[in-house]
Image 1 (cartoon, rainbow, N blue to C red):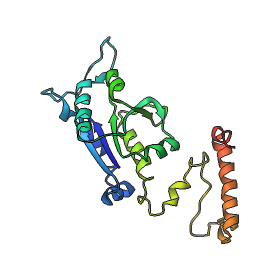
Image 2 (image 1 turned 180 degrees about the vertical axis):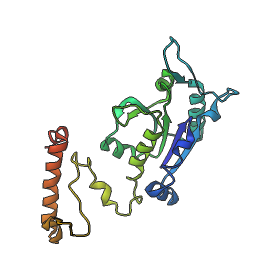
Image 3 (image 1 turned 45 degrees about the vertical axis):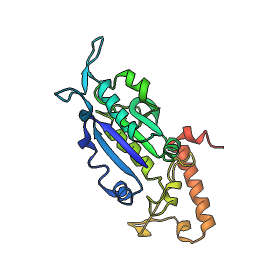
Length: 227
Protein backbone atom coordinates (compact mmCIF):
# COMPACT_ATOMS: atom_id res chain seq x y z
CA UNK A 1 0.00 0.00 0.00
CA UNK A 2 1.10 3.56 -0.74
CA UNK A 3 -0.36 6.52 1.14
CA UNK A 4 0.39 10.07 -0.02
CA UNK A 5 -0.54 12.73 2.53
CA UNK A 6 -0.89 16.34 1.40
CA UNK A 7 -0.57 18.93 4.17
CA UNK A 8 0.56 22.50 4.73
CA UNK A 9 2.17 21.40 8.02
CA UNK A 10 4.20 18.27 7.19
CA UNK A 11 6.27 18.30 10.36
CA UNK A 12 3.17 17.46 12.38
CA UNK A 13 3.34 13.99 10.83
CA UNK A 14 6.99 13.25 11.62
CA UNK A 15 6.30 11.36 14.83
CA UNK A 16 3.27 9.13 14.07
CA UNK A 17 5.06 7.25 11.29
CA UNK A 18 8.47 7.07 12.99
CA UNK A 19 7.65 4.65 15.77
CA UNK A 20 6.15 1.29 16.68
CA UNK A 21 3.94 -0.68 14.28
CA UNK A 22 3.78 1.98 11.56
CA UNK A 23 7.56 2.30 11.42
CA UNK A 24 8.02 -1.49 11.26
CA UNK A 25 5.43 -1.78 8.51
CA UNK A 26 7.38 0.76 6.46
CA UNK A 27 10.71 -0.95 7.14
CA UNK A 28 9.24 -4.27 6.00
CA UNK A 29 8.15 -2.66 2.74
CA UNK A 30 4.48 -3.35 3.47
CA UNK A 31 3.48 0.29 3.24
CA UNK A 32 4.97 3.48 1.87
CA UNK A 33 3.83 6.75 3.45
CA UNK A 34 4.92 9.94 1.70
CA UNK A 35 4.12 13.34 3.19
CA UNK A 36 3.93 16.23 0.73
CA UNK A 37 4.23 19.88 1.72
CA UNK A 38 1.36 21.71 0.03
CA UNK A 39 3.51 24.85 -0.03
CA UNK A 40 5.73 23.19 -2.62
CA UNK A 41 2.81 23.30 -5.06
CA UNK A 42 1.83 26.95 -4.80
CA UNK A 43 2.83 29.58 -7.37
CA UNK A 44 2.90 32.24 -4.66
CA UNK A 45 6.33 33.70 -3.91
CA UNK A 46 5.30 33.75 -0.26
CA UNK A 47 4.38 30.02 -0.50
CA UNK A 48 0.81 30.96 0.37
CA UNK A 49 -1.77 28.16 0.47
CA UNK A 50 -4.73 30.00 1.99
CA UNK A 51 -6.70 33.20 1.47
CA UNK A 52 -9.70 35.12 2.82
CA UNK A 53 -13.08 33.57 2.08
CA UNK A 54 -15.44 35.18 -0.40
CA UNK A 55 -18.48 36.69 1.29
CA UNK A 56 -16.56 37.61 4.40
CA UNK A 57 -16.41 35.79 7.69
CA UNK A 58 -13.73 34.70 10.13
CA UNK A 59 -11.05 32.22 9.16
CA UNK A 60 -8.93 31.51 6.10
CA UNK A 61 -9.65 28.97 3.35
CA UNK A 62 -7.17 26.65 1.65
CA UNK A 63 -6.82 27.63 -2.01
CA UNK A 64 -7.74 25.28 -4.84
CA UNK A 65 -4.68 25.96 -7.03
CA UNK A 66 -1.98 24.29 -4.87
CA UNK A 67 -4.35 21.40 -4.13
CA UNK A 68 -4.95 20.98 -7.86
CA UNK A 69 -1.22 21.09 -8.57
CA UNK A 70 -0.39 18.51 -5.89
CA UNK A 71 -3.10 16.03 -6.82
CA UNK A 72 -2.52 16.43 -10.56
CA UNK A 73 1.19 15.70 -10.15
CA UNK A 74 0.57 12.61 -8.06
CA UNK A 75 -2.08 11.29 -10.45
CA UNK A 76 0.31 11.74 -13.37
CA UNK A 77 2.69 9.30 -11.68
CA UNK A 78 0.27 6.50 -10.74
CA UNK A 79 -3.39 5.61 -10.44
CA UNK A 80 -5.12 6.19 -7.12
CA UNK A 81 -7.97 4.12 -5.73
CA UNK A 82 -9.20 6.88 -3.42
CA UNK A 83 -8.58 10.56 -2.74
CA UNK A 84 -9.64 11.22 0.82
CA UNK A 85 -10.34 14.56 2.50
CA UNK A 86 -10.25 14.61 6.30
CA UNK A 87 -13.10 16.86 7.44
CA UNK A 88 -15.47 17.06 10.44
CA UNK A 89 -18.49 16.90 8.12
CA UNK A 90 -17.35 13.69 6.44
CA UNK A 91 -18.58 10.16 7.05
CA UNK A 92 -17.48 8.96 10.47
CA UNK A 93 -14.63 6.45 10.32
CA UNK A 94 -15.54 2.98 11.58
CA UNK A 95 -13.96 -0.45 11.45
CA UNK A 96 -15.92 -1.54 8.39
CA UNK A 97 -14.68 1.49 6.48
CA UNK A 98 -11.11 0.80 7.61
CA UNK A 99 -11.42 -2.81 6.47
CA UNK A 100 -12.57 -1.74 3.01
CA UNK A 101 -9.96 0.98 2.53
CA UNK A 102 -7.17 -1.35 3.68
CA UNK A 103 -7.83 -3.45 0.58
CA UNK A 104 -6.85 -0.59 -1.74
CA UNK A 105 -3.40 -0.02 -3.19
CA UNK A 106 -2.80 3.71 -3.58
CA UNK A 107 -4.42 6.45 -1.51
CA UNK A 108 -4.15 10.22 -1.28
CA UNK A 109 -5.15 11.90 1.98
CA UNK A 110 -5.71 15.66 1.91
CA UNK A 111 -5.47 17.37 5.29
CA UNK A 112 -7.78 20.31 5.83
CA UNK A 113 -6.74 23.36 7.80
CA UNK A 114 -8.10 26.74 8.83
CA UNK A 115 -11.81 26.88 7.80
CA UNK A 116 -11.31 24.07 5.32
CA UNK A 117 -10.59 23.83 1.61
CA UNK A 118 -12.19 25.63 -1.31
CA UNK A 119 -15.37 23.67 -2.05
CA UNK A 120 -14.38 23.31 -5.70
CA UNK A 121 -11.45 21.13 -4.66
CA UNK A 122 -13.86 18.80 -2.87
CA UNK A 123 -16.21 18.67 -5.83
CA UNK A 124 -13.51 18.06 -8.42
CA UNK A 125 -11.01 15.72 -6.78
CA UNK A 126 -12.25 14.10 -3.58
CA UNK A 127 -13.72 10.58 -3.68
CA UNK A 128 -14.12 10.04 0.09
CA UNK A 129 -14.74 12.54 2.89
CA UNK A 130 -13.93 11.12 6.32
CA UNK A 131 -14.27 12.36 9.90
CA UNK A 132 -12.81 10.72 13.00
CA UNK A 133 -15.51 12.11 15.28
CA UNK A 134 -17.96 14.86 16.03
CA UNK A 135 -15.42 17.45 17.10
CA UNK A 136 -13.03 19.88 15.42
CA UNK A 137 -9.23 19.69 15.40
CA UNK A 138 -6.78 22.43 14.43
CA UNK A 139 -6.09 20.57 11.20
CA UNK A 140 -6.48 17.26 9.43
CA UNK A 141 -2.97 15.97 10.12
CA UNK A 142 -3.76 14.06 13.31
CA UNK A 143 -6.94 12.72 11.72
CA UNK A 144 -4.90 11.55 8.71
CA UNK A 145 -2.51 9.74 11.05
CA UNK A 146 -5.46 8.05 12.79
CA UNK A 147 -6.89 6.92 9.47
CA UNK A 148 -3.53 5.67 8.21
CA UNK A 149 -2.92 3.73 11.43
CA UNK A 150 -6.33 2.08 11.23
CA UNK A 151 -5.54 0.87 7.69
CA UNK A 152 -1.89 -0.09 7.99
CA UNK A 153 -2.37 -2.38 10.99
CA UNK A 154 -4.78 -4.45 8.90
CA UNK A 155 -2.26 -5.17 6.14
CA UNK A 156 -1.03 -8.78 6.04
CA UNK A 157 2.31 -9.11 7.78
CA UNK A 158 2.13 -5.87 9.76
CA UNK A 159 1.07 -7.40 13.07
CA UNK A 160 3.15 -10.27 14.40
CA UNK A 161 -0.08 -12.13 15.17
CA UNK A 162 -2.43 -11.46 12.25
CA UNK A 163 -5.40 -12.87 14.16
CA UNK A 164 -5.07 -9.98 16.64
CA UNK A 165 -6.70 -7.47 14.30
CA UNK A 166 -9.57 -9.85 13.66
CA UNK A 167 -10.50 -9.86 17.35
CA UNK A 168 -10.36 -6.10 17.85
CA UNK A 169 -13.36 -4.11 18.99
CA UNK A 170 -15.92 -3.44 16.23
CA UNK A 171 -14.78 -6.24 13.92
CA UNK A 172 -18.01 -8.11 14.71
CA UNK A 173 -19.93 -4.98 15.68
CA UNK A 174 -19.07 -5.77 19.28
CA UNK A 175 -16.61 -4.40 21.80
CA UNK A 176 -13.75 -6.64 22.83
CA UNK A 177 -14.00 -8.63 26.09
CA UNK A 178 -11.77 -7.90 29.10
CA UNK A 179 -8.17 -9.09 28.79
CA UNK A 180 -5.63 -10.11 31.44
CA UNK A 181 -1.95 -11.01 31.72
CA UNK A 182 0.52 -11.99 34.45
CA UNK A 183 0.46 -12.06 37.41
CA UNK A 184 -2.62 -14.22 37.91
CA UNK A 185 -3.29 -12.43 41.19
CA UNK A 186 -2.40 -8.86 42.15
CA UNK A 187 -3.34 -7.23 45.45
CA UNK A 188 -6.21 -9.67 45.85
CA UNK A 189 -7.49 -9.16 42.28
CA UNK A 190 -7.62 -12.48 40.46
CA UNK A 191 -7.82 -13.41 36.80
CA UNK A 192 -11.08 -15.27 36.01
CA UNK A 193 -10.51 -19.00 36.52
CA UNK A 194 -11.82 -19.91 33.07
CA UNK A 195 -8.90 -18.09 31.43
CA UNK A 196 -6.46 -20.26 33.37
CA UNK A 197 -8.29 -23.50 32.64
CA UNK A 198 -6.74 -24.23 29.24
CA UNK A 199 -10.20 -25.21 27.98
CA UNK A 200 -10.43 -23.40 24.64
CA UNK A 201 -14.16 -23.90 24.13
CA UNK A 202 -15.03 -22.54 27.57
CA UNK A 203 -12.64 -19.62 27.13
CA UNK A 204 -14.21 -18.63 23.82
CA UNK A 205 -17.69 -18.91 25.31
CA UNK A 206 -16.64 -16.69 28.22
CA UNK A 207 -15.13 -14.12 25.89
CA UNK A 208 -18.25 -14.01 23.76
CA UNK A 209 -20.44 -13.58 26.82
CA UNK A 210 -18.29 -10.75 28.18
CA UNK A 211 -18.08 -9.06 24.78
CA UNK A 212 -21.86 -9.06 24.55
CA UNK A 213 -22.22 -7.75 28.10
CA UNK A 214 -19.72 -4.95 27.49
CA UNK A 215 -21.30 -3.99 24.19
CA UNK A 216 -24.79 -3.91 25.71
CA UNK A 217 -23.60 -1.79 28.62
CA UNK A 218 -21.31 0.66 26.82
CA UNK A 219 -22.60 0.74 23.25
CA UNK A 220 -26.30 -0.14 23.23
CA UNK A 221 -26.49 1.28 19.71
CA UNK A 222 -24.19 -1.50 18.49
CA UNK A 223 -25.89 -4.13 20.61
CA UNK A 224 -29.26 -3.39 19.02
CA UNK A 225 -27.79 -4.11 15.59
CA UNK A 226 -26.59 -7.60 16.52
CA UNK A 227 -28.57 -10.51 15.15
